[in-house]
View (cartoon, rainbow, N blue to C red):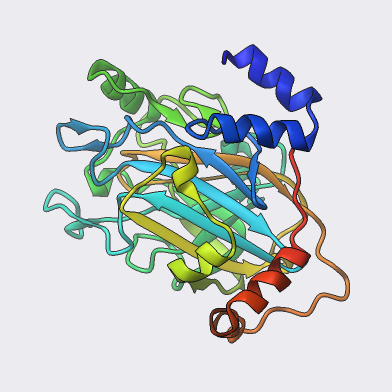
Length: 300
């Protein structure tokens, strides 16, 4: 199926027809791919750079998925990079991890939103080089590059050139590898870590069992990395509306972005307590039923 046909489907098909097409072509995912309440962005499987290896190594990012209820957002990442990071003596700390996850609701490109301090960010990898002290959700975020101290790429153009020269296919999930949303050239211009921000919420990590019960299924897109990382946060920490969310490895050896949106939080919604996850796991089917009743699917 070519790109023109896919765009036509997104504009004109009903939810039922769209889901039927996805079921027939489980290996593909494009912007706003909705499945069981999760919105998926699937990255190229051949653009992670791990030493001389292109594709399939420790820095291969396969996909990101987002799901929401009236008061909670769920994030899932499928990758080969664990939260413990990747040992590398060439890195300043001897370890390279995930950068931070950024949300941009401004409609501006990343650098402009960064200059205006209008980004939101989530530090989810406790051992990374983030400029904020703890994991959690942050507002009024500015970003910095940590690729130089992590033996990484100088800019995205260098990354794209290396991947393509070795037969890989660079991409960024819902964005093309060369999308002007990000700065492509210059020295140390990959902004992949929170420099500063105001903490506005906590994150709760999710077990594989909880993610499965919530209907997560990266395998339907053949995204079968060794690591699936999940966490949730209260949606009141961020605005509603359309956004682009993205994260890089600290070395910029792979990256992924997703285009999606959050609906407004329910005015009567009560913030979810930390014990919700334990209750969900303990009550199994009852918890899953409640979650499904609250989920509002969408195709943006």
